[in-house]
Amino acid sequence: MNRDVLLVLITILVALVFDFLNGFHDSANSIATVVSTRVLSPRLAVLWAAAFNFLAAFFLGTAVANTIGRGMIRLEHVDQYVVMAGLFGAIVWDLLTWWWGLPTSSSHALIGGYAGAAMMHAAIHTGAASVFSVIIPEGWYKTLIFIVVAPVMGMVLGLTFMVAAHWILQNKPPQVVDKWFRKLQLLSAAAYSLGHGGNDAQKTMGIVAGALYTAGFMSKSDMLSNWGRFRWPIILAAHAAIAAGTYFGGWRIVHTMGQKITKLKPLGGFCAESAGAITLFGTALAGIPVSTTHTITGAIVGVGAVHRLSAVRWGVAGRIVWAWMLTIPASAIVAAATFMIINFFHPQG
Image (cartoon, rainbow, N blue to C red; front, side):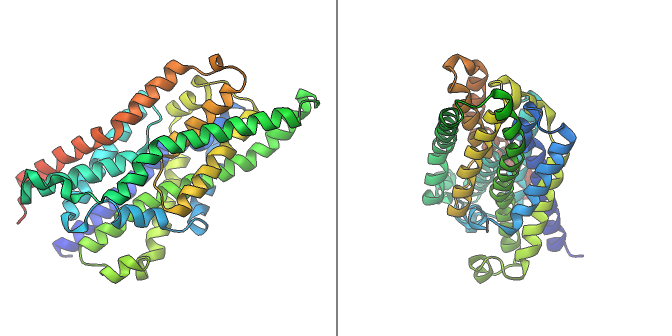
């Protein structure tokens, strides 16, 4: 096996490890509400979420993957070492925030790491003045705008669904409402997991496609036509990795999402998951790489705020927002430092 083939295989393996950790880290987003309302046990909940994360491979296309793969960073500034350094930056930030129990965005860690490594590549090879030339502004505008828009959409939809549900069900006994929504929450949790897999697995798919292109295994026409013969191997590998990560999920974050932000009942869980799923379906089909974490957190806040603003633990929500703000720059810094170390030991042309 020659060195180029080995390098691209290692890069793809690291990308799938990130995808696994994405599922591991973000499994809480898919199952926190259904676990906290005791509709499903944790073991059954992760199986349910993992199955629908994988099934998303067949429903939500590759628009987000195309944005990540060729719409955010100019490919002439990307090589295998940039991809690996970017993935390392994202993985480090994911593990740190998992340890701290903070539901930050694996998606934003990935794009931050990818950008940081590419910018360091440009700084080393063409000078510090060129670092921002690696960025494709159009891809970043919609991503950065939706850092705010996605959780607001989730919050507004969650609030709207809760208000509508209370009005429609105002004369129904609480026990009957609880019984109905314990069953309906299975559907909303499945829909949210489908949206999660459809949005987040695609980000790894884009990175893998970029790695194959920079290594010369994929042509420009392949990149522009949904990756040619590599299409289904990339899609299935990414969804299998995120589904496996979801199965082995992170319980620290389940606790934060399901209990610390606000207390949830089945009706609230259904409304939050439905709001999150609708937001994720729309953004996945539009090719906008949003944070599934931001989306479901906004939805949970909206549901909790229906009763009274004090029902939301704003101190916890504030810690989460700070972690959101730090994700892209922190992962970019780690990735840039990683690329600099790689270049020191293995200088490139």
